[in-house]
Length: 327
Image (cartoon, rainbow, N blue to C red; front, side, top):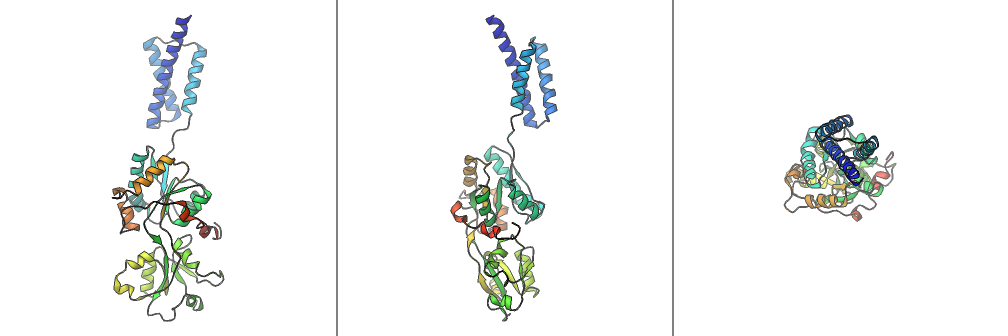
């Protein structure tokens, strides 16, 4: 009797080993379920012929049941890295594709960069918690921290603040209220861009606010100001600092916004604590990492690495978005 039981266990184990081997191969190459079943059955038939395996019907049911439970356990999903659609798809791949590859190597899980089609898709999918690792403005980071339990893992060095700028020769625009008194529109990027929102917060009465003439970038707005097609423009302070001295001398700063944390990387709850710690260690590495060189050329030319971030820095900033109609 003991010999029969031992024989049954041995044969069952061989069946399971064959099935699990097929499952492992299938998951690695992402073969559909039907393909896995075909591989599994072929493997078992081959093993049966070569080893003389014979299982009773009940034993076969047990084997297939165990195999089925293991097969339908959820596979480890990819982590999605994204950023706002400020660039073309091709430029987005240049900026964030290398980072996704580096994170894949270090996290032990595939990280895929996904470029949003437009701002509508970006904000909708973000609110639905469809993204795992996100690099964007602090107002978005603050909203995710509060509502989606994201964790800030790193931020660009320095603060973000913004300026309302006019030409020095335009004597009609010497103070902030002159924008309203003269009915002058301000060239700025559309909401929910932080620059425009931050400058508009200076005007606490929603009825008495300047109109916004939408532009696609700080460069675009500044070019229109120089061409005389905009009398006032919203610029990031860093943008103004990088201008040649001769050009800066021709400009007048009406006022500056509050200061905010710089652009931030947050991670969802699907990213484990150890993975978050790895991301922070990578991004804040003193010498930087080659996979983020293009990103720094775009957003922080003087920096080579990110700074650590903590939740307290973002407390209350979600109100910048929540006060917007429709958010």
